[in-house]
Length: 97
Image (cartoon, rainbow, N blue to C red):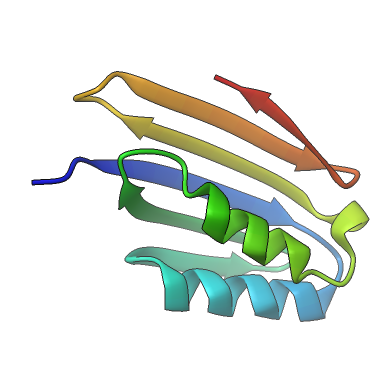
């Protein structure tokens, strides 16, 4: 049986089109919950073993105003003692492993 990592996701942006896109993408792509409030979206979802890099990169590339999006993602999987914390700000990722 595969180990599943938990992902805690937060994004804030003033671009309503991007918020719509993010909310729909997370809801369609992952098994979890998505909550939108004002100019932010919070979500918690699972991924297999580690941070879902391919999927999140696809999401970020689809955004109209990447430079205005502020994204934080905490991923953890206790069994393998895996933790990753990533912040996307001003069009760049800051990754803390």
